[in-house]
Length: 183
Image (cartoon, rainbow, N blue to C red; front, side):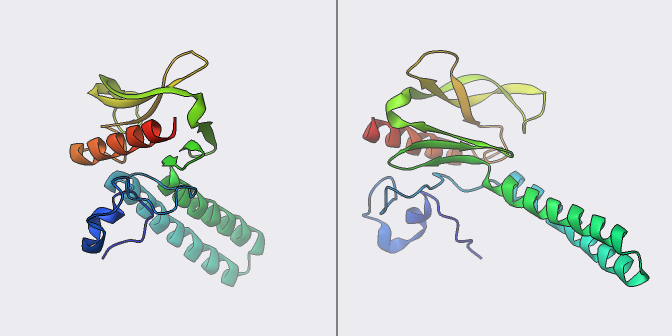
């Protein structure tokens, strides 16, 4: 069952769009993710939603037992888990004609294309699924015009690309293509 995520490779899924724009976008002013959420990210969010359903079900049982303050606390925890699962799926990089947006769990940053000196793929030690353990892999780096240390946008061993090297290459090429077209 295909999920209707707005991604750059959605054009590759449609046979009718075979001759379309290589970046896969009709509306360049709309923020879109140039890759699909990976299985680790979607699986983590699904597990969190499963736990949230248990917490909300327990809130219903507690409310029927007569303890409304405790049921309210359980319902609030369940709602927080649902919001966290949605944010977990949204984590990543989005592009548009305005610039590049990096979305984290709690906040996001937007960088205009004019403020980006280079976007490149490098071979370096990267974190495995965001944990402290590092392994050898590839990372897409954003080098700002103002100088300073380059920012890691995403890696081959992140939740979106672990075990999917071809998806990483496609996403890196799409972002580098956007940077070349809009700088």
